[in-house]
Image (cartoon, rainbow, N blue to C red):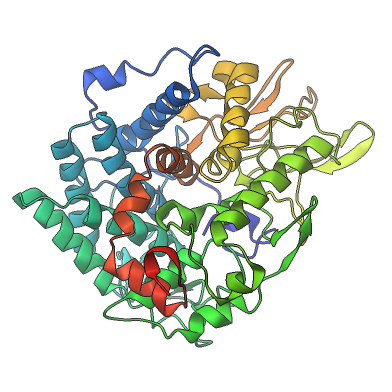
Length: 482
């Protein structure tokens, strides 16, 4: 899901970014002027989160391509569109309506334009001129044509993240006017069109991707990671479902173990503990695996947050900026692909990479990402919100700017004789990314809103498709009953 540049570092498909120029869509004047001054220490946590949400929402609203709704993978670097970022945008528009950043009618219209484009975009097995095949979409789309970017794969997980945003719009826009009815209708058609039972050369598991040139990828989705949302959506499909054994096969390779004094399911980068939770409320419900462990997946992510905070406090790599307050290791941008000396030890720095800290694997070059801590806000607000606030206090506009948090920073990368390949070095502060990434902006906005109002969870707790997917995966308890 995350990118091809980190393929050797993560059990998933990742890719670096460069592509056509994104376009700007209008935002009401009062909203555009609202997010300039940095939030100060006098603000309450609620006011800080409001500032963060407002800025981050504007990324999706202003950077969407008019009429298609395609979202750039990154900005301001020229970029192709990330189909997962479009899913985060569809999640953002109802949040904007609820918060008053745009009107409900504006949000519904933007969602409708996006859904209409996705539904009408050409699908087929051809290698070029198509946006997807069998209801799935290519990982990246050309910003202008809306079709496959170069030779990227048809991505099952990125399609799942897109469909999660699609289904959120289906549930949120529930009024009887023609526009909201059209949103619901198109959202339903898009989800029902996905042939979840097709990309499975190793049944019952779902494959990571397919391309017309080589066919299916050599890897399937298995073990604890961000693909929980994929399997729940695949199990809940009324048209192309996978069988319940897909979930038990998926969980069969989970790795449970201790890290930083806590026992939980291991996955090194924090995004794996966040993504599925953006749309699915796992509080109080358990599958067979979690019943045996005596917790739920929400508690599992809470433990991951505290373990990462503890890792930063112990700081085994001796990196600058790590401490009890500032933490957050996940897949993100970085300064350079170079091996350099830090405090007498050699460190392999990376540009975009799957950074991780855990019992099964660690990849740490001193780079932190605000989305790492920010995506954990609902699980551990008492440590996640202070982490974000301290980042703003220490680094100011070098890290927190027009659209909220820039993607990443590394206070240890201060080399005058080894300039960064990405971002910039600020004297006395270290390296800072200069791009916003759609797939990292999304969790910051959505998880802040889930903490504040539970908006996404409340809407999708009513989704018949997600409820069916959870039940077929064997979840019980809470709203699902015995």
